[in-house]
Length: 136
Image 1 (cartoon, rainbow, N blue to C red):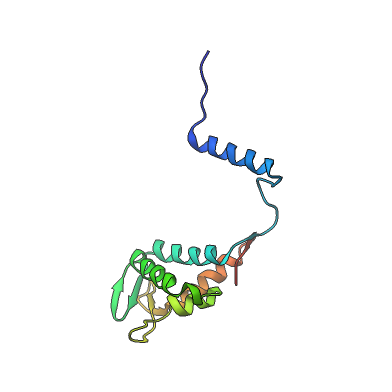
Image 2 (tube, helix red, strand yellow; image 1 turned 120 degrees about the vertical axis):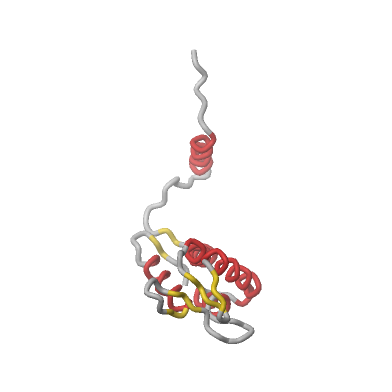
């Protein structure tokens, strides 16, 4: 007789379902998924990191991962002053503290757009999806 074994991923999912059931919580929630402020900001940073766009900061060009790392560092710096997504965009993702110049995103056609505007458009599209309820 063979000894069937679960691989780690299905086993972890099974254990999570058992733990949720024991705690009286459903394994799947009905209705919109409410995202915390951290999750919403994390989504924006992930989109920057995964983007194939060029980001401009103080006349220098950066790829998505570099821009995301910079935003993450500024987010950590300003975390105590960030009470909402708009605070994150304004304090950590819209302009240089040194020069005051806006951060820019280079569009596919070569034109530029303020990074703050691009992030707000991304967020609006994401939060308008069925089942997603973003933090303000």
